[in-house]
Figure (cartoon, each protein chain N blue to C red):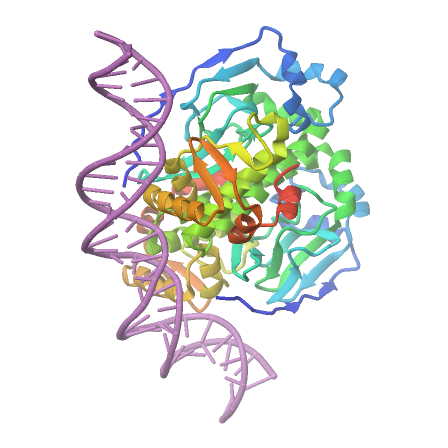
Length: 263
Length: 263
DNA sequence: CGCCTTCTTGAGATGACTCAATGGTGGTGG
DNA sequence: CCACCACCATTGAGTCATCTCAAGAAGGCG
């Protein structure tokens, strides 16, 4: 019943003595600073620390922890999860390049969820205590943050809908295709992305926790989907064989997805 | 399988020729305009239309509709839901007084969910096309909107966790207690609230759609919880008999709930 | 090569769903 | 005032999908 997995604590390793590189990352086009002219980005220096690398399979922060930073994710996959007192873990969503991690109602309170790096990741850290002030001083960032929150909400709505009263096949299909759509939307920001395939570093166990299913069931369901010629998931790589069928099973509409989940 | 329920379209009835009353509503302390001094609220006039009453059991807007307004809810219960192509409905959350309804990533796009008034409700409407501009001009509102979004996110996280890999009893218990905590936090804004009971206008059918369960199962589960002396739900009224036990079953912590879900 | 994580498969138990029918409540109109 | 109707709540019995428990294979890394 319990999910006693203990993960190592992630070490944040500064990668660049040149702070301004942070703002020149191509991911900017999607992130908090989208639309802010490059020459006006200098002032952000005062609000953030340096750029960091985080090794894969390590915790960024834990639920309930008094963590001093929030982050913009530049590259890598970060899993956001919450663990109930009983030990059952629920994956809330997967953060992808451009996502802002750690904004919550009360910035002076402990984190309301855990963040775990699935793959090696690159992040830009902002002290939480000055975040509110930063938003106040730069209204375009506040607007942008509200928009980003709304997008995350939309994704969680999709998740809720995808998980409701549906068969294992539909649920797994919806989750996989939601992630596929997100990564496709990021284009070059995520390496290894082609027209019909993406890198997919999420283990079946983690997928199970995101779907509120058991790993064994996820496995059986993935086999069925493979046998049906819908998509194939092996060796940490997802190949969509029949996109139409996949979206039908998942009851998803690629176009409306793009509007809601992508930005 | 299908949920073919057809609801009548809600009629919006202007209640006040005195627009400024909108800003004087006590719910303001919780809503978008929290913290904005009363004497600076005049400018909002240009961005909003009047105050409206909406009859119970009626649609405010439908998913996919090109609806021109977003709303602040002053009183009443509004259900936000999304319906999959197959016709299965999923309740996303319940909006309560003070909640902002209709903010989404793309304000120029159709609504991403449906809003249905469970009880008669009072709302204040904002034209969606000027909402972005309003946020841009008044950064404190943008910050506030981001915070409200974060709170809604936190609630949906609770929902996701509550629905994951848990028994019917735990899920129903969690949902009911989450709603109880929210209403308790609103205090006088919701009439009929006492120390251990609240008005609870949500039918078992709607509860089922919020929990991704069948109405029959919800009913059986509520009976069990009643027989266990946890809480009682009848005649649209919820009475919590044993709060400790209820929170234990739901795996919820009232204190952390207050921080995350309330504002 | 050995170790560890992840994936894979089988067989049986169980809890939620399905189908079907009855009872209760509140509102409406004759 | 009562009959009727719509909606919601309640209960039973049987089915089935997912979970549980158990074992083994495959892949990655030192």
